Length: 367
Ligand code: SMG
Ligand code: MG
Image (tube, rainbow, N blue to C red; front, side, top):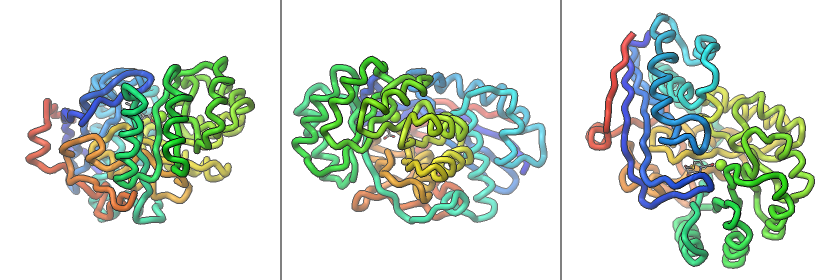
């Protein structure tokens, strides 16, 4: 496939309410969309980097810069580029996985659209709907938290994830568990604890949580293996799992018993599938994470979440969880599930008028 031109489109999507985590608060998503045009088809990819490097070292301005200066030039230089060959063109660009994922997704989308194949078919999906969980940010008070959780349960979400941090953990979990004895419940610390907090984290054990997600730092994989010996609740890694190799290593040393897969974090959907396969081979269940994606990123995530070893509900919530208006036709929750798109490629496209309304900048890149 030959790339004719690429547009780097930034859209501004206000969140319905602020989303607070242990590393900061988001109230607007500044999203980079990669739009590739080839002789055979167009393709779309969404970059999940936030506007600040709080979740990981990547941030959206940096992603746009590295895409333009280092990722696209070797792609434009070839007549026969495929999504599967991109990794070999980028061996001298270290890291920048979210940027790489966005370009790879757009190219894969174009390839699949050209041959009429859906992401779900291509990745090996085995179901046509996926179970949806919802991630609940850190609110101002326990009553507010209970209200929010009740609201999401009423909408049909089948699993609740609470964001935690030191000072907002055991009490919050206890309150939610007491009000909802039977729900699927888990927590996400986004690296906010130290190994020395192990005994404190073990106080979450009585609440029958599905998992504790990324309690310690991204590079503290070995510390997670120590934590596992003290905390009975299953430990799940998110930020630490940047590749299939990282997943294999973490599993080998017993650092986690569940893995969160985010395609942006691991460099794309092809590597995400390899992470899935490595985990499956080791008997480790996975689930699909979220980065407050628009419908573009969500569509592809939902396809991924339909693979066989995605055995826990994902952070694949409906468009209206975060946005009054999505850039694609909205993803709507149906009995706690989202439908896996069946159309070619990611199966959805931006609605042109909405895309125009949301666009803040548009940069054309040519070979
Ligand atoms: O898309 O529903 C979503 C977000 C889910 O909590 C979520 N994501 O660490 O898993 C995580 C966070 C990362 C983004 S927080 C700004
Ligand atoms: Mg997480």
